[in-house]
Length: 512
Ligand code: AAO
Image (cartoon, rainbow, N blue to C red; front, side):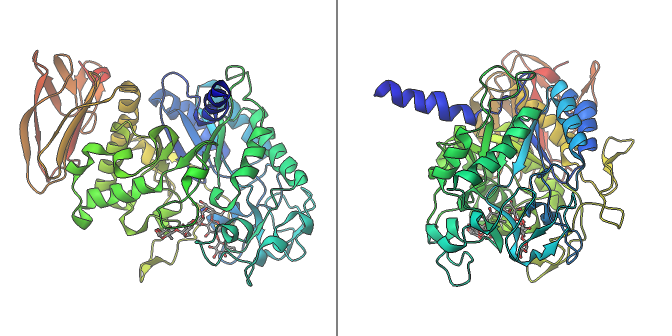
C-alpha cells in the first residue's frame, strides 16, 4: 500500500510538475500574441543564447474572429475547432517553430483551452481563423465535430446558464464562464477530442501545457484527460517524459474551489505571489520588503514545487482576472524591474516572465477601456512582426520585457544559482534587503527613500564582480558597477534611492 502511494505520488503526478528544461535553464517567458515565425527567430537569436528555458505560446487552435470590438486579443480564447491555424500563423509555421526552438534547447508550452468553445454571442458563420463554419446558436462546431450534446447546458442549474456565484463549486464547473459554451468533459467522446488535440501538439514536440480556466473543470475530468496524454517526443526529450502541466486556477481565498484540488495533477498558478509582491514594492498596506524574509510558503503560498509564479499575466496586466490594483506591469517599469528581479533571485516556484505589447491604455473609473485591444497589427487585423532595434529592444509596439537588460540578466542569475538556498539574509527592518544563493550569487535591494551604503557578508569567493543590473560582464570588463568581494567574502554596496534601478546583483559567472 505504502509503495503504491509512493508510486502514485512520485511516479505519476510529480512528473507532470517537471518542465523538462535543458542545459540548466530555469525560466519560462510568455511571448503573448507573438507570431510563430517571430518566436522561432527569437529562440535562435536570443532565448537560447541568453539561457531561457521555454516559451508559453498563445493558443494555437482555430478561433473566432470578432468585429466588435475589432479583433480583440481574447478572440483566441474562443475556439471554433482544433485546426492549428490562428492569428499567430499556420500549422506549418507552428511546426517549424516547435522544431527550431527544440533544436536550440528552448521548450514550448501551449496555452490550452479545453473548458469551452466560443461564446453564446458569437453567432454563426465562417468568421473563424481557418474559415471553419460554426454556430454558437445551435452549438455546432462541425470541424471538430461537436454538437449540442457535447456541452453542459442541462447540468447548469443557474437561470442564466452562467456562473453567478463563485461560492458554488457546481456552478463554477457546470455553467458558462462569461458566456463561453462549456464542454461536457465527463463525456468519453469529448475527452477523446481534447486529448487528441493535445496529443497532436505533444507529438509535434511541445514540452507541456498551460491549462486555461482549470477552476471551471472538475479535477476528475482533468485527471482522466491528462492520463491519455502521450509522452514527450523522444527526438528532443528523454523516453517516458510526461508533459509539463500547469493549471490556471485563481485562488486568492474565500471561494468554493481550492487550488489544492489541482496540485496533485500538475503545477498551479500562484496568483497570491504577484498580488503580494505588488503590495510589497508599492509599500501599500504597511508592507515592507524586509517582511519577505520568509517569502514563499511562509506567506501562505502553495508548496514551492507546485507553484508557477509571475509578477503579472496577460489578464491582470490589463486589470482583469484577479490580482487587483497592486499588480505591477511594464507601465511602471522601475518597480516592475525590481519586482521581477526579486522573483528571479528567489528560489520559490517555477518563474514565468511576461512579454507584452503596448495598447492605448485608457483607465476610466478603475477600468481600462481598451483592455480588449489586440496585438500590433496592420489595420486589417494581421499581426505585425516583432522588429529588433539597434539596442536589442523591440519595435512595432512590442514591449519585450524579457529583453530588458535587468530582466534578461536576472534570468541568467537564476540559472547560475539554481539549486542553492537563500543564504546570508540581511535587512534594515524597512525596505532594504539583501540575500545570497549559497556561494553562487548575491542581490541587494534599496526600496527605501534614502541611500544604502554598507558592507555585507556575501558568501561569494573573493574577486571583482560585475553588477548585472547596471550593466554586465563583457569580455574582461564590466559595463556597469563593479563590486569587490574580499577574502572574508564581504563587499561594500552603495545604492542611492534615486538611481534608475536601485538594486545590485552579482553572481559567479559575472566575475572578472
Ligand atoms: C470576452 C468578454 C466577455 C464576454 C466574452 C464572451 O470580455 O465580456 O462575455 O468574451 O463574448 C479571455 C478574456 C475574457 C474574454 C474571454 C473570451 O479575459 O475577457 O471574454 O477570453 O474571449 C475567471 C476565470 C479564469 C479566467 C479569468 C479571465 O476563472 O480562468 O476569469 N482566465 C482565463 C484566461 C483568460 C480567458 C479565459 C480564461 C477564458 O487567462 O484570458 O478569458 O478562456 C474572480 C474569480 C476568478 C475569475 C475572476 C474573473 O477573481 O476568482 O476565477 O477568473 O473573478 O475576473 C478579486 C478576487 C478574485 C476575483 C477577482 C476578480 O481579486 O479576490 O478572486 O477579484 O478580478
